[in-house]
View (tube, rainbow, N blue to C red):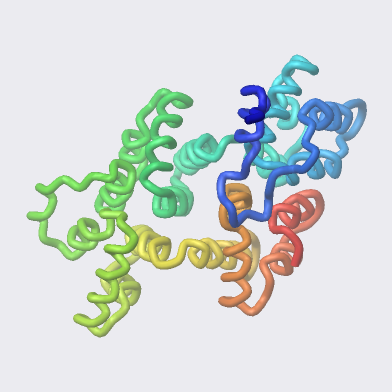
Length: 315
C-alpha cells in the first residue's frame, strides 16, 4: 500500500475547512510561500494593494492562512498580522485580522473586545456564547486564559451583573449548580432547562411547552423578560432551533435601517465563512426575500465591501 510521507499527509489534513457548509473552502494548488510573497508585494512601497490582499486571504481556509503566516515569518522575518495592521485601517483591517486567526482565537479576541473599555458590547457576548458548542466553548476558555492571563468567567463576571451574568456563566461552564433551583424564579427555571444544551432534548421540551402553554417559548420569553436577559434567552432558543437562521437574523438587523453595526456584521461573516455561510444565505433569502449578497453590497463600500462579498460567495 502506498502512503504519503507523514509531513505531506499532515499538511493535507491541516488545510481543510472547519465545516462543510462554508463559502470559503480550501484553495486548490495552494502555495503558502507564493501567497506570502504576494502579500509582501502588496504592502511594499507607497500605498497598499488591498485587492491583492483580499485575493489571497478570502480564498483559502483558516488552516491554509496559518501556513501563509508561517511562510511569511520565515521569508520576511516579520509577523504578518503586525505588518497588515500597520498598513490597513478601519473595517477592512478588522476583517483581514479576523481571517488570520484560528476560530477559537478569534472568538476569544472578540469576547475580549466586547468587554474592553467603558461599557460592554452585550451583543458580542451573546452571539458567541449562545451559539458555540460545549466543545468550542471549552477551547475558547483555554485560549482566553492563555492569551489574556485571566479566566473568561472572571472577565464576564467583572463586566456583567444579575441574572444576565448568571446565564452567561452557565453557558461558559456547561454546569448548573443544583442549589440555584431553590430561587424558584421563572428565569432560573428557564436557565436550568436551557443550559442543558442537548439539542434533541430541548427541541422536545419546546414542543411540550407549546402544547402545555399554547404559546411558543420565544413568545413567553418576550413577555416575561426584557433587555439583555431577553436577548440572551432568545439567542439560546434560536440557536437550538436553527443556528443559520439565528445568524441570518443577526446579519439582517446589523444592516437594516440607518447605519450598520459593523462589529456584528464582521464577526459573523468572518466566523461563519467556512462553517455554515451557505445555510445562512439560504435562510436569509427565505426570511427576507433578498439575498445576503445584495444586502451587504447595498450597505457597505470600498475594500471592506469587496472582502465581505468574497466571504459571502456569489449571489
